[in-house]
Image (cartoon, rainbow, N blue to C red; front, side, top):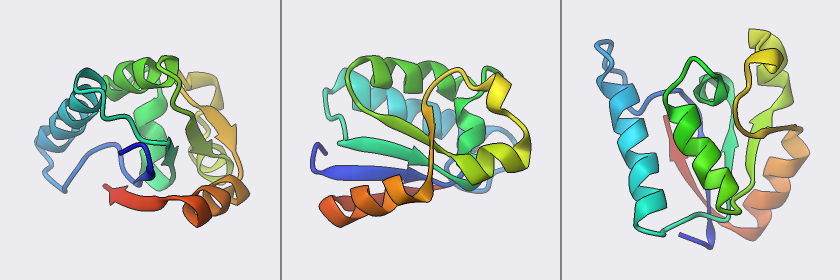
Length: 112
């Protein structure tokens, strides 16, 4: 995974409305950390930035992954759109140029 970038496009995996998707995302992030299969970076855009807020349990896992040395980015346009800058519990705000640079260097795995 270290040669890959995860593009997180939602605060859940799949479209289940009953909370299953958020549980799946949390499990995925937990496995990344516990199995030491960390990616080169994680870039969150669209609803993916909501996973970085203090309201989302996934933010705890993303903060742990970030503390392990993996850069975690939040799309500035998306953060501004949702008005959540003050609520971010993990990640750093970045522009789309960061994602373009990451995608040019690494394979991208899209989740959401």
